Each structure stands twice: as structure tokens, then as C-alpha cells.
Length: 164
Ligand code: SF4
Image (cartoon, rainbow, N blue to C red; front, side, top):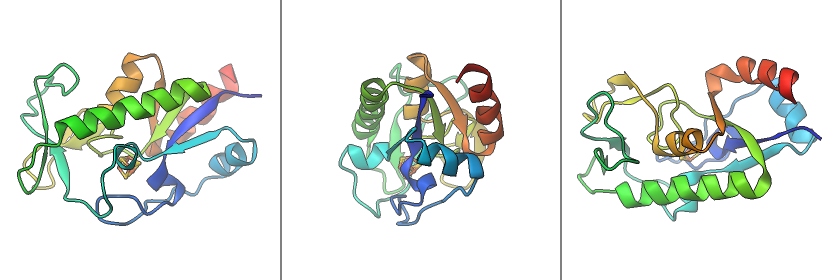
């Protein structure tokens, strides 16, 4: 059997985003991996007890290179609340699940302060993007799990064809 893939729950059609919506990705590979039992679905934020809906949150103090895992950036809600601890817990939960289930890959929705792997928002809640990654994506990568964004599913397909 092939390697397992950790997947963002909102990408699998679960309405777990901060705005109460899903962001389903329709792709034949995803369908096939599901049938093969290779998908491990998690919403890291919900696993850490965050409600749906919840206030939008962004990584603050997000000068390039600032990083929540090393303690020099924090995660803030638009309402001002500091939710750094919850986001760190979310990332730990995702890593624990990935390890327990043997996931070598993760397919996560880009842009999220948890799941983003290519870009995130800049902390100003103005819709401005910057290159960077969310807390869960960063922790998974630090622990050797290859993270792909939803837009990179084609790359993940190629990767899996090479290494299983
Ligand atoms: Fe989707 Fe990840 Fe946000 Fe959960 S934490 S709603 S899985 S992007």
C-alpha cells in the first residue's frame, strides 16, 4: 500500500473554516487516494478546540522570516485576541496524527495561518498576501513531512508516482 497523505479537512469538503465554509478540491487523484484509504483528514484548528465559525486569524509581526514556532511571531485574531497557543496545539495535533498514521505527505490549503504552505496573509487583515507558511505546515516540514498546497496537487501526484 502506498504512503498516506494528511489532508486539510476543508479541502475534503468539511465546513470547518473560520467562515463556516468548506473549500473542496475536486480532483481525480484525490478521489482515487480516498478509495485506496490513503487519506488522513484533519482540521488542525478544530482539533485544538476552535469553534466554527471563529474570528479570522493571521500571523502577526510577520516580517519575512518571522516564525511562530521559534517564538518570534504570534497568531492574532482580527478582534485582537492572541491565539498563538491554540495554533501551536493545532500543529502538534496534526503532527501527532501524521506520525500515528504514517503520513509522509500532506496536502494542505494554501493561505491559512495553519495550513498555508506557499503564502499567508501579512497580519494586517487587509487581504495582503506574503510568501510564508502557516504553523501546521511549518511544523510538519520541520519533521520531514513533504507539504504540498492545493494548487500543487499535480506535483504531489508526480511525487507519489516516483516514490509511492
Ligand atoms: Fe482548513 Fe486547515 Fe483552516 Fe482547518 S485549519 S479550516 S483544515 S485551512
